[in-house]
Image (cartoon, rainbow, N blue to C red; front, top):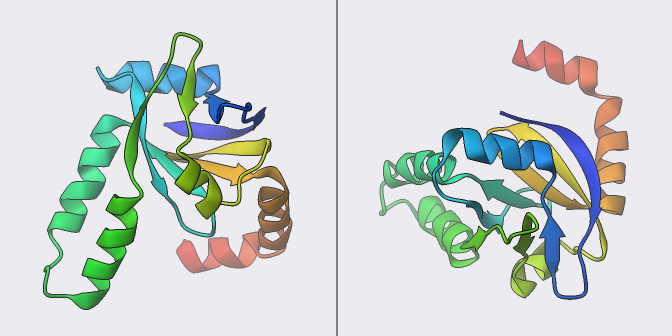
Length: 144
């Protein structure tokens, strides 16, 4: 399970160091040493382990290809996806097009959200976090 928040930097070669706690979760559940990365929601990127990626794709396969919304979402989701292998120093390479989609610059925040990791522009994450903090109780009431 991915939890926590970590501030990191993307280097000049678009490499991002993955926090050790997230790498440890990756080692626990998957034989593959890396993440599937794709466009997320709310202007961030999603990182999935191989097993989590399989769960997401299984869910999407259950949608009818005749459904227009499903087709449009799948095109955006899969056309932007790629597999990023961890290098020897625990870094992944962020594809330029995904970096642009999420408006990522040097300073980023990685957020563990149970089954995935989200990569945010640090300034965007701070704004989202501040906006959502005031709604924490009402969100909890709606969900529980």
